[in-house]
View: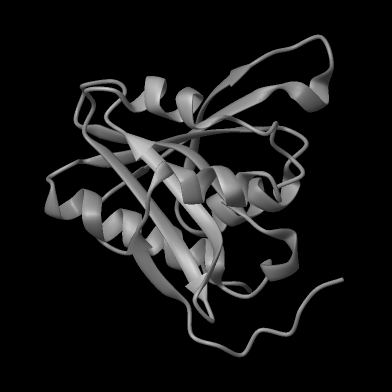
Length: 159
C-alpha cells in the first residue's frame, strides 16, 4: 500500500546503519550488510545521504569516486516502496548533483538493470545518456551504464 505523503522531504548525511535499514525495504536489492557498504567505500571520497519524511529515513543514495576520471559514481539509490512517486528519488539525485558540482566532479555515472524501467525512464528524463550495455544471458538482467554531464540543468520537457 502506498502512503499519502504531503510532508516535506529533508535530505541529510546519514550513517551506513540507516542505509542498511532502508535497503531492507527495497525489493529490487539484496539485503546488504554494513560490512558490504563499508568495504566498498573504504578510503574513497563518498556521499551517503538519506531522505527523511516525518523524521523517518525513507530513501538513501550512496556514491563514491570509483573511476578517478573526474566523474562521481552513483552506486546505490533506493526508496522504500511506500514512499515512491513522492519526489524522494529526485530530491536525493538533486542533492547529489549539487554536492558533486561543489566538489568539481564533471559528470555523474550510474549503472542500472534493463528491467528497472522506472529508473531508466527517470534517468533519461533528467539528462542521463546511455554509454554502454553489458549483456547477460537474460536480456532483462543487462546492465545499462549512463552518465550525465554536470553544468546546466538537463530536464527534458514532456511534449
